[in-house]
Image (cartoon, rainbow, N blue to C red; front, side, top):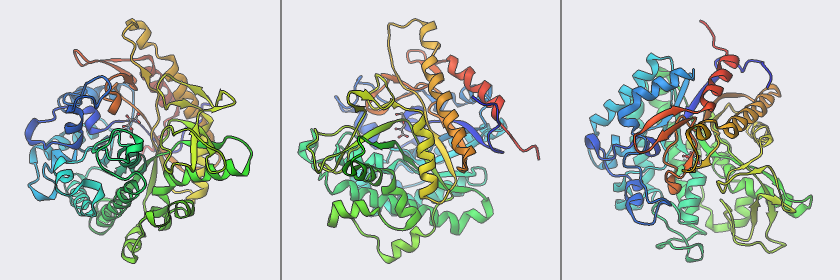
Length: 482
Ligand code: GCO
C-alpha cells in the first residue's frame, strides 16, 4: 500500500450498532424493541442466542473507548437505541436515564478526541410502534421518527457533528417484508415461513415510509438545528458492487435493475426526488408515489452518503432465462439474480460466511459509480469488514492472528485510496467492527471484530488486525493542526 496520506481530516473509525453491542436490554427504563421480542422467539437466531447482554457496551463503554484510543481511531460510529430514549415512541415520556447514557458515551469519546458518528436507527424499533400501527408499514412512522430525531438533535447535537438518519433501509425492508427473515417477518408464503405480508408490495411501502422519515428528520435538522450546531446529516445504504454475468444486453440491463432495486432505490429519491426508472417499469402501480408535498421535503437532500460495502456479485437476467430462486436481496422475482459464480469461478474469493464474497476492486468501482451517479456527493465508508465463522477448535494464537481480515482491510483501503486519487470525495472509513458482536440472525456464530470477545467472560483481546489498523492509521492520518 502506498504511503500517501488520506485527505485532510479523514475520519478513521470503527462501526457498531445498539442492539448488536449494548446489551442491558431492560436496564434503566429502556423499552422493548422489535429485536428483543424476535430474538426471544425460539428458532429466530441460528445459535439460539440473543442480544440481552450482547457485548455489554452499556456497562463497558469506558473500556471500549480505551481500546479505540489504543488503535488511534479518530471517530466512532454507533447507533442510538430508540427504545432506550423513547420506550413508547411519541406516545410516552423521554427516558432521561437513556439520555444520560448517551451523554456519558459522547463526552467520554470527545475527551479522547474521538468524533461521535451517530446513527439514529439501526434496525431496533420500539415494539410499541410495531404493535400500535405496524411500524414502518404505516405513514405514522414518519411522525414518530421525526419526533425521535428531534429529541436526539436537541440533547446531543451540541456535540454530535455527524448524523445518520437510517441504516440500510433498502436492505432492511427486503429482509423484513420480502424474505420475511427479520422482525416482524412478513412475506408471501412462497418465500418461506412468514405470517401475513405481500412480498411484492410491502417492501416498497415500508421503504417509502423510511425515505419520507429520513426526509422529515433532515427537514427538522435543517430548520431548527443545523445552523447553530454546525453538523452534517446523511443516510447509510448497503451497497454491493454488481457486474453483468456476460456481455449480453440482457445481463447488462439486469445489472442496472440490480442497482436500481438496491442502493438507488433509496438514494435516487433523496438526491433526485424520484425512484429509478427501472423500478417504475418493473413494479408499475406497486411502487408508491411521492406527492408534491413529499417532493418538497425530499429537496432538503443530504450532506453525505454512507456506504456499507462488503461484497460483489455477478448479475444474471431472469426475464429471458429461467433463474433458480434467489440469493441475497434479489427484489423482483423473475427480474434478475445476483450470483457469486461465472462458469463456476467466483468474482472474488468466497468465504464461509454465505454472502461475503470478497472482491476488493469492488470498493473502487462502487465508489466511482456513486461519484458519477450522484455528482460527487461526499461519501463515508460507514462499514467494511471481514466476518469469519466462529471455530471453537481454534487455539488462541490461531484466532488472534487474523491474517485474512488484515488482507481484506488493506486491499479495500488500497482500492479506496485509488478512488480518492481519481477524484472521489470520500471523507471517512469505518471498519465493521471494533469487537466481535451479535450478528443478527447468525447470533454469535460470525465474528467481525478487530478485537476478540470471549462471550463467557466478555473479555476483549486485540487481534493482529487491531494492531495492523493502528499502524495504518498512524501512517495515513492527516489532521489539521489548527
Ligand atoms: C448493517 C449490518 C451490520 C452487520 C454487518 C456485518 O446492516 O449495518 O447488518 O449491522 O453486522 O454488516 O454483517
